[in-house]
Image 1 (tube, helix red, strand yellow):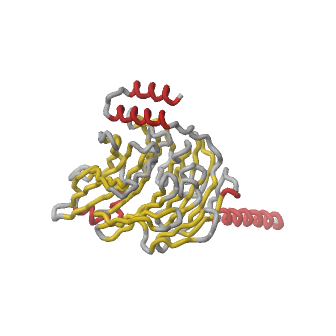
Image 2: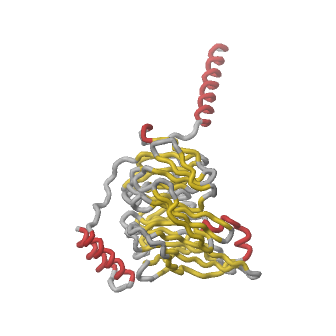
Image 3: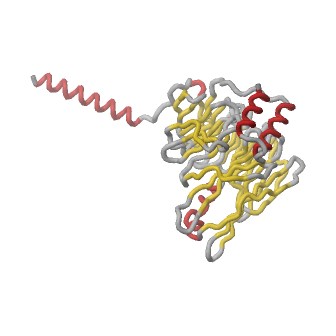
Length: 377
């Protein structure tokens, strides 16, 4: 009897020991080949990073701005300052970076080898950068002016063409409470974001609403760059994780940061697809119907893998995913997925014209949809 009791106690001890060991291990990726995963580099905690459209070069923050090839370990130091925003051009030949200097930002464009091509100093804080398919660089700039009664928030979209000419597109002008500005400090700028539709003709941007009595929120505004028509399409809580265009430039991926991530149609004002995840870390492929949500990878609506949870970016060709978890930057070689066939120049021109007519409300949604389907058939 004593021997059986000792045997039973020993088994319990083994089970508890094994359970403790399993709890101490980090969560492993599932549904993903080990040979397709790689620890790419160390990165500054919370630092910016960007991968070129072909998935060959990565720019990231660590002790300044660094550039490395995705398949090599050699790193090139481009700047000693920490970048505020990074973006590769559609052809992968240019890298744009912004750096903060008090109430000013320095905007720098490098070639694919890390050589500086041009730079400019602009008023305000550049919070995000995007390149259009035609090679125009877009920079969202926020200018804050502090007064005794509050602060003025003014946002402009700077448009830099390939010759270096700059145009300013005013987005919004409003007021923030003084305690909001002082309370958030530098983190206030995370509320000012924008994304460019893959077709390059429409943007969606956020602004912080700070009314006297009602709680603060993030207003989501949709705007056609040429038509100029802008309209509020959604309201998000402050903890929202991101706003991205879908690969077909027809809908938006949003998260509320607490319970749901979803695809939203700004024209039909309805949710079209949903993920039961907070979406604090959200990334959307611009080439395939693939989304990364809080460490989960989805393809065509189905969960295909569980990866590390962190800030993520897809390469432009949709074949590589980068995830920054703490101070580690991981790369994942993605499975081949179907992507939209390139639209020829003639049909693309007609599609862009069709989208502009929709923005000017010269077409009904039904007319637009029927004509679009016929055009792309």
